[in-house]
Image (tube, rainbow, N blue to C red):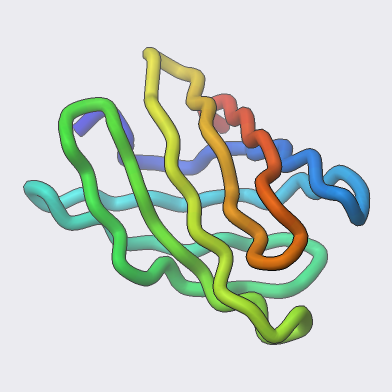
Length: 97
């Protein structure tokens, strides 16, 4: 599927720019994988694929919160947003690694 593989993300948060690596594997409408960054490794939870639209969540243990993501894949790029609980939303962009 077009979403499978590694993605270099840029997340512009109120706490600064984060640049994790997102590893995705799709199986039908199910999305699995992990996100690796400065805050450590977090497995993808509740991952879903609907055409070029993706959604997933991670639990950021260091921050004590669940972060929900939604994005659209367009070729070797993706864009969307992360919902950061009380910190609001942050735009995300990614390119295939």
